[in-house]
Image (tube, rainbow, N blue to C red):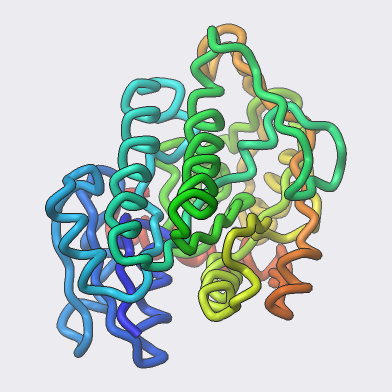
Length: 327
C-alpha cells in the first residue's frame, strides 16, 4: 500500500511513517516544516519505499499530484499547540480549513481514502463525561481566540463528512485525545514534555490554573496503531472515532508523577491562566474519551500505562537536553 502523510515530519506523522515502512508499505510525506522537523524522519530517510516533499498542504497542484500517487492519505498537517493557537488564530483557521479542503478536493477526483486528524478540542465546553462521538459540541464565544482551533477542526470534520455523503469520498475522522510520547516538543504549550524538561533541569514545574483540571494521555504508538487498524477497517469509512486513553489524571497529579519519574527535586508552581495566556482564557475541567466505538470496530483501544508514557517522555527529554536539541 502507498500512503501519503501530510504533516509527516511532525510528532504523530513521523511515528506513523516509521510504522508504515516497518510493515512494508510505501510512504510519501509532505511537510512545510513550520512545526515539524526533518530530524523526526531520520529513521525513514534512505529507506526503500520512503519519499518526502517540503511544501504546504494548501498547495493544490502539489497535493493533487501526491494524492494521485498513493492509495490512502492521512491528513495530519495542522496548526497545533495551545500557545500557537492563542497567538496566531488567523494562521490556525487558514491552515486547518484550507489544507483539509485541498486534500479532500484532490481525493474526490479518484475516490481515494482519506483519514482526517481531528481533536478532542471539538467537544469544547461539553460536560457529559466520557465524551462520545455523537455528543453535541459546545464551543466558547468568537471573541476568545482559544476556540479558533476547535472551531476549525469541527469544520474540517463537517467538510470531510460532506465529501463522503455528497461526493462519495471514503473518509475516516479521528479525534485524538492528548497524544504524547518521544519527539513531542513543548514549544507550543504541550504539557507533558514541558513538565519533563522543567523537572530534568531542576526548574519549577509550572502548572496553569489550580491543577485540578484533568486530562487523559495516550501514547503515540497507540494512536498510530489505531490509525493503521482504521485504515484497514471497511466499517470505519464515513465514521468519527475517539482515539485516546480513558485513564484520567489531574494536571497537578501529572506534575507530581513527572517529578518522581525524573528523580527531580523541582518545586511545583501554580501560574494563573491570565499570566500564561491572554485575559479571559478558558480551560476545560475534564476531557475523557469513550473509546468503545474504536474498540468495537477495530478490536483495539489505547492502553499503554500512564507511568510508561511518562517514562518515555522523560527519557526523550533527557536525550534532548543532553544533545542541546529543541525541547
